[in-house]
Length: 241
Ligand SMILES: Nc1ncnc2c1ncn2[C@@H]1O[C@H](COP(=O)(O)OP(=O)(O)OP(=O)(O)O)[C@@H](O)[C@H]1O
Ligand SMILES: [Mg+2]
Image 1 (cartoon, rainbow, N blue to C red):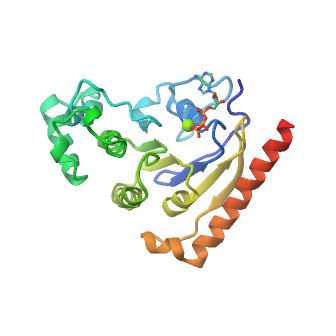
Image 2 (image 1 turned 30 degrees about the vertical axis):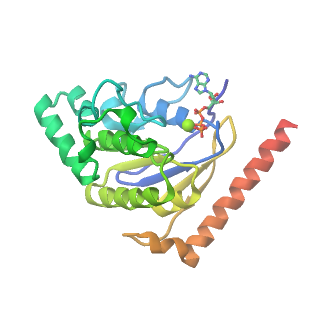
Image 3 (image 1 turned 90 degrees about the horizontal axis):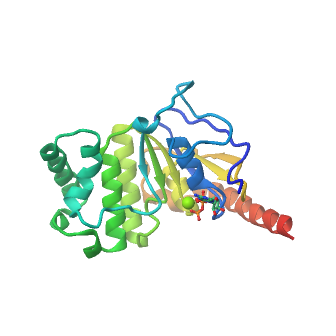
């Protein structure tokens, strides 16, 4: 199975890039290859222009599924990433409590993942990724399981974090509005094998809040992206016939 092919793009330090494309086009595969969890059949991933063999230290990665450890309570789950990186256990758990408070989930610190809703688990996984403080965050549908309201709150929260600490972010989303609201640039992928079909710059001011969603400028970008998405779906249907 060829998941991605002839794919090339670069991301600037501190840039926020969103990746959209049809289901199964290779988005998660692309992040796995980027993070070094999967070797590419051909091609290279460069950091600051250099091929780096062990790229894991550069990337915080929030997977499409939350991957919480069922036997550990929420505080330990959030602290886990830091602990694996060598932060002493007590300090890791203190910092986990701090971020849990910030996300208003501290009253669940001693609960287990099975006792949380899907949206809460996703927030916990997101906190764990953030806490590791990496220069590049790979986020695979981080808000996919959230209801619309929580999702909006989390999006604004993520923008706040990004503006304060300026990590480089590559975010996969199926939600065109989310992509535009958050990103500096939206990369659109073709159906499998995934390639970058089109790149749309989001020239909306910063800092942004949800009032931007109803502006004419926002809608023009949205129309451009939706048109291209529908064109891509039609194209891949024709190819299948
Ligand atoms: N470990 C694997 N072994 C074989 N094929 C795989 C593997 N992982 C993914 N694939 C295939 O590669 C293709 C791309 O999968 P990928 O998970 O990257 O898609 P995606 O764009 O993230 O989809 P979605 O939007 O549904 O999450 C799919 O056809 C999938 O079946
Ligand atoms: Mg995926």
